[in-house]
Length: 257
Image: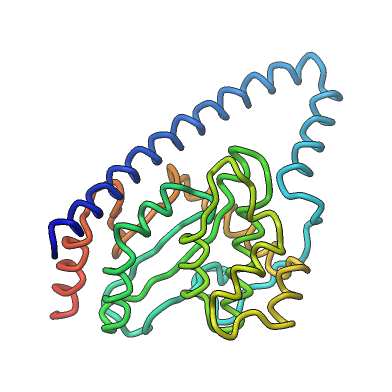
């Protein structure tokens, strides 16, 4: 690996650490606000209920809750994971991610080439879980709609390519650009064969919105600290600061046994 590549990966990992800390601060702030809201609720319950109802609508745009429709080939408990790679691979990389999350993009920048190489070699299988953490932190619906669009891409057998496009064109965290279905469909044009009438209908209808919400609920139930949460055979990759080279060594070692 060249010195330039090492420097780029180091910078991406440093950014990943910074973004995860920012998430933790934001979550602590939200918890504090929730406590304050609860106190206020004792004094004015009816008003608080109205605020909560209004906020719920703001977070997810005009889309109403629908049925839970898993994308094609989804696996795991309640079919909440999008599988990538061969089922027979010795190692499993479990990824909980949000397409609006800057730390997730930093993880992609540092680890994507290694993950793609290991998946391509048949030594690693990845399981992607899509969540809406940033929608909750900053308001909006871009996390939800981008996740639904990625699930629509999975229906077309083009999840990985579209997944990478979404991160390559990720807007600023405060810019809810992915709430615009037209933008998500425009980006599908960068994946050969994805921009079809079926894909467009899936995106516009929010076919997998209920599935995304259920995935996020599972993320909350697991009490993970933030996105990305990345586990290699159950071991925390991000928290342990496992480098891409170390991840590769661990996967290759497992494949020899």
